[in-house]
Structure formats: C-alpha cells, structure tokens
Image (cartoon, rainbow, N blue to C red; front, side):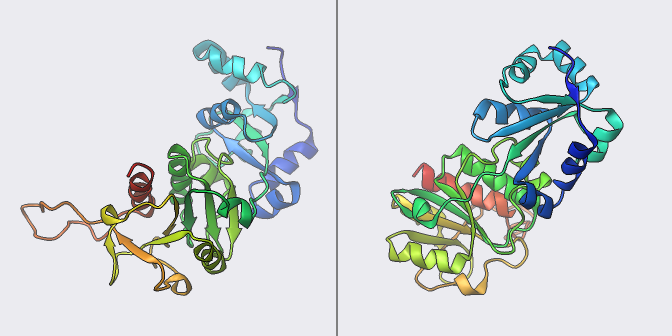
Length: 276
C-alpha cells in the first residue's frame, strides 16, 4: 500500500467540527472510530464511507498483525485514505487511547413513518435514553436480532455522536432510523395495527414471557432514571416487566439489585419477540 496523502488544514478543521452535533448536521457526516468498528463498517458496506484517516503506527501494526485489515483498506476503491500524525489524531479522537484509525461516513437519511410501519417486523423505540453506551448497545442488539428499525424520541442521545457510534461496534446505520415525536408515532402505529409494548414494571404489567408476539410489535424502552414519559403511558399499550429468578439469594428474599440496566432489559425483551 502506497503512503497515504496528508489531510489539509481545512479537512482537519472539518473533522474537529464533527465532534459536535451542529457540525455533523451541517456536513451530513459523522465519525466511526476504532479498528474493529471501522473494519465492520467497511465489511457491511451499508454506510457511504467518504474517507479513512490513519496514523503511521496503525498502518505498521495492521500490516504486520492483521494483513486482512490492510486488504480491506486497499479494497476501499474510491474511498481515499489519509495519514496524519499521532498528536493531531489524538485531538480528533474521542477516546483517551486512540487506535489510530477512523472513518468519515455520510449521515444516513432518516426513514419515513410509512417505511417503518408498512409490512411486518419488530421496532425498538428509545424514549429519552440519554446514556450513549446504553443507546449504542440497544442499536447493536437491534441489528443482531434483525429488527425493522430504531425510533428515537426527543431527548434521546444523538445516534451519531462518537460515544454512541463506538458502542454500536460498527452497527451504526445498518437499520432504518427515525427521530420523532414518540407519542404521535405510537398513536399512528396503533391505528395501523401495530402492538405497542412498554417496558414498564409498574401496576398492570405482565411478564414479558407471557406476551405473544404478533409480527408487528413496537418495544418501548424508557429513560434510565425516570422510566417512560408520561405522555406515552397510554392504557391501550401493554406493559411488560422482566421478573427476577424464582430462587433468591440466601441472604435476602428480595433481588439484590433494584432494576436492570436499560439496554440489558431491552435486549432480553427483544430476544423474546424475535425468538418466541
């Protein structure tokens, strides 16, 4: 592989801007950082990769230890590869221990309401999920189980911010997505025959294991601390809870933890609806 060209000062400025949502919106681009995530994006071939940025140390390491990775980089076709110094790369990276490779990808366009509600499948709705790690893990899980799409309520973390993208492990952009007024979307979905399931262990909830998948199901996961928004707690929607194991710890008759992590709870229910 020939030595890559260098980035211009303007290109470096644009990359710095992509760390903010305003920059991503203006340029319609975002960054995928880290070796595994970048390789997965290249392998998936779903996102439009504008160009790659690498350091000399990364190229040397990948050439010696992972020749297959170098083949992926070389087979990028029209996707340019640029090289920059370690210090500048660290300024662009979102991690303290940067791996020396990132991809700049085109922001995928949001899906339409009709595209998401036509046909069958399982949709995951994130209601004010603010923790980037939780949202990224939910996306990764949704891709693993082949969901139809991802819904993001107002107040949910930006799907394309670096920490969320990193947590998806290369799954960003694989599924259709839509940031929307969740109350309005769920009402439209219910009118069109979709079954809305709220992950809510409050009064009136039933075990997720007793819920019968219909083939047109929307699973709604709420905020890590506050749970679901009040305006979507509609009595028409089914409430699902995840019960702890029947056998308790010998030191207590109650679970030793108050609740499950939001992304873990979502994964458990997704698995049930995808493998009933």
